[in-house]
Length: 151
Image 1 (cartoon, helix red, strand yellow):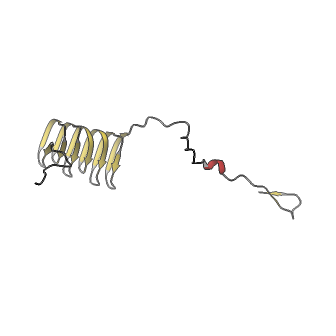
Image 2 (image 1 turned 45 degrees about the vertical axis):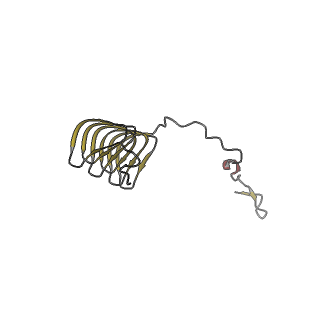
Image 3 (image 1 turned 60 degrees about the vertical axis):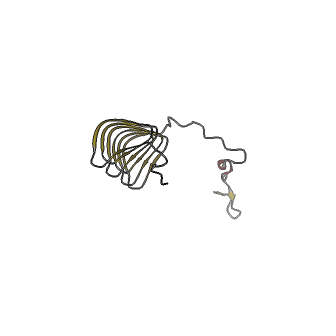
């Protein structure tokens, strides 16, 4: 028996090409947008935006994968992946951002880094710091010269 599931998910919401929806989508599983949504998507699963898809508003999901157009605030718990035909204008909050060559992003990204440590990270016991072994300046005395030092 052939499974009709998409990426192992039996709960799929589809907004087909040519369909325009103004409002909110709140689901547990996968949402695929091939039409246009002006509003909000909330899911713990995936949001997939096809090449003809357009989302304006807000997206909150586990994973967002886009080949289409997004003009929104995008929050993804796992990752945001922009395929080569994707355009995203807005704010992206995610720990992982993947962009194929050709994808376009205009906006602000937040990936959970607030600052970096003032001290470099400590190296493991069997790894040495190469800066401690940098070459020291060497002074060469030329025997033929009259006591001049050459560097």
